[in-house]
Image 1 (tube, rainbow over the protein chains, first blue to last red):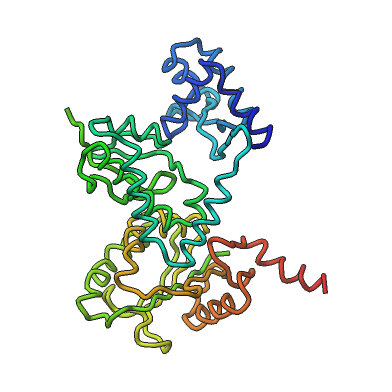
Image 2 (image 1 turned 180 degrees about the horizontal axis):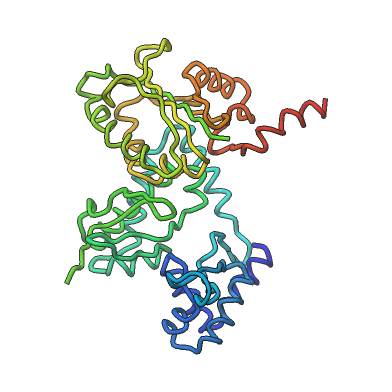
Length: 213
Length: 158
């Protein structure tokens, strides 16, 4: 852990700021100041203050964009919009470095061709981390995924294993799929409800909707 | 500059065998995905159907793919962030496990078309020297600026 990471994370301590951050992150697209203010239920100026603090801390990225179709004179100046920044911050007290070890282990699994065993282990791990009857969305959020509905499927905005998946995509995405299938088994649903469904910038797995009531 | 990529895979059985049937059937949909991926530029085609694999003299069981992309991100999104990921996940069913590098990338001038022979020699270079600006991988990637200046810088250090 670097002290910079700690500073960044403590930026989220303020409850309003945290709500603003959570809202922007959950949209997965650029969000304007008015929209954020309305969603969180605060004044526009307060929302703008927190949004800019979050940009300063590196948690959000700002951009300028016209929010209307109008162009030319009279269309107004472009609005400031925000989206989640791509970086990630870890705080561990006392300092721990599981990521480096995980990367070394992943490399080892690939060298010895142990992917199938790794996938089995991931599935068992998933099964242990969910209990019968739990809500899938809750279970996923607890593990760092950000589920959202799209048509008949539940997709995942965030990959909790991002750094590993960048270095060892085939191994980690395959393990992630089995981990998600394990979670489904843990809550007592059909494991085949999870499948690989990769698209740019998101987690590689999606689920068929199971609690459609 | 554009990014060229060659990859090879060693089939477990002849291409017309039942073991390879799912792979052969996956070719057409996957080519559709690649050709529609933003940043896709070109791929080497042989014959009129997707099942016409690239002809070469490197062994009967070797499947070769050669394509050109605008950027690392474009190629990455196709390889790992599309339906192609699911096909790669099944590679063990169709292909032998490769202990040595089976994929290589290098930069080419825009508008030029790489050849299979060039790709195979880049792969040999990767095997012999490890990743360099002339032959590299996703994991040890060289951007096009580095590819241009690195050799000169290496000369200067001598």
